[in-house]
Length: 269
Image (tube, rainbow, N blue to C red; front, side, top):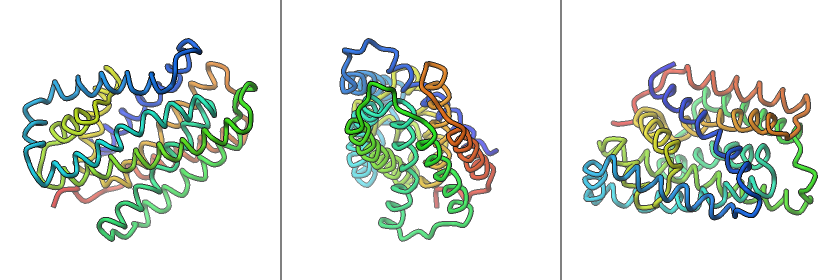
C-alpha cells in the first residue's frame, strides 16, 4: 500500500469513530450543534497549525477559487452527515453518506475534466458499493426511528455524500496547482471553519497527503473504510447487523484493499 493510500485509510478509521461518539452524547444535543461546533473548532485549529501555508494558498487567485467553492462543501457536509445519522442511525446514515461519495466524485471529475473512469476504479468501487447496499439492507435502524425519519436520513446522507465529494474534488484541483496539501486543507477548512477537533486535525492532514497523489474519485472510494469502522462501532454500542450486512462489510473491505494497493499516476502534472 502506498503512502497516500495508507494516510487515507488511517484518516478514514479515525473518521469512522465520529458517528458513534456523537451518538453517545445526550439525546437533547442537536446534530446541527454537534456538526457545527466540532468542525468549526477543528477548522480553526487546522488553519492555525498551517497558517503560513494556508494564507499563501488563499493569496493565490487560481487556488482561492477552488478553496472558496470547496469550503461550501465543508460547511454542508457535517450538518447533513450528523443529521443523517441522527435520523437513520449511525450505520445507515454513515453508509449512505460515504457510499454515495465515490459516485459524486466521479461525476465531478467527468464534468470538470472529462476524465474517463479506470477499470480498477470501476471494479473496486462497484464491489464496495454493492457492499454498501448489502450493509444497508442487512442493518436496521433503532426501533425508535419511524420509516419517514429513516427516509429523511437517507436524503441527508446523499447530500452529505455530494458535499464530501465536492470539497474533496475542489481540494484536489487546488493541489494540482502545485500548492502543498497542508496549505490547501488549512485554507479550505479555515474558510469553512470546520473540523473534527483533534481527530479531524489529524485526519485532514492525512487526507491532504493522500490527495496530493490520488484522484478524488479514488480517495473517496478508499474512504469507504470509514463506513466499515462506523458500522462495527455501531454494532458494539447496540445497533443490529444481519448476515447480509456482514457480507456487505466484507465487500467494502475487498474493494478498498483492491484500490488501496493499486498503482496511481501522481495527481500533479
